[in-house]
Length: 271
Image 1 (tube, rainbow, N blue to C red):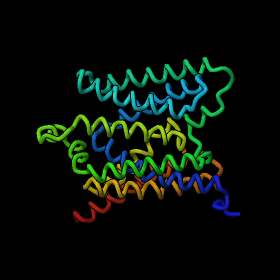
Image 2: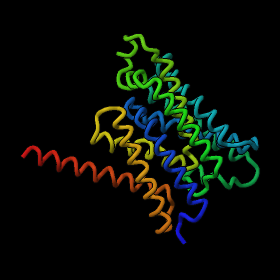
Image 3: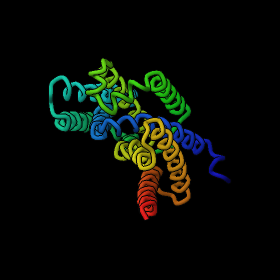
Image 4: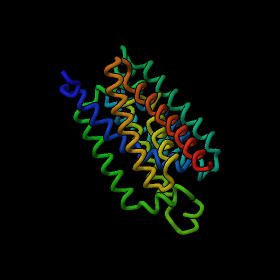
């Protein structure tokens, strides 16, 4: 029987396609703004929300989303308003989130069975509700970028120029930072905290090898993300290894091949 005959496999495949498209949008923004390290801080700060959710007996996704948005806006505020070095602000939020998460997981009675899925990811556990949440998030993000594309691009590439031009830099950066935070929370269930940064950045840096325009990078990153995620899912199912690890390894392989192919093309053109 084909893998596609199974409902959970269909959900996993559709979920990877949707989140790859969403990941290309927010991934292009965070890579252009050079805020990948901030994404790492937000990702690990989510652990505090997960621990609090389990301790209170409510949805850990909701509490993780609150922690993610709060930590994202906190880093943004510390680095811009209070002139704290960005790496220092990230370190504070990163360590605080992990410490709070470990504390509440320890205080939660019994064993937390779903914690590993947030740490390492489990694509095959995606439900129809998850798919709906991913689809709504992706549609809202795409609509926002379509309406404010020029402003977002200006703020992403050169905040100083955008500020001099009279653009609402602080509001745009705050909104996009919150969008990134929500995207991180929704993606945790797919590949886990440990591997999340790769799926948001690797397809984008592959696209940057071949493209220069913001929209072109976003489109190619989406294509790379969809193909590598779907390919990783099929390979992981056949070989019987964790899907998240296989997806990231495949994306890294695509990046290395692209880098080699681009170098060979440059050498050939120079001859």
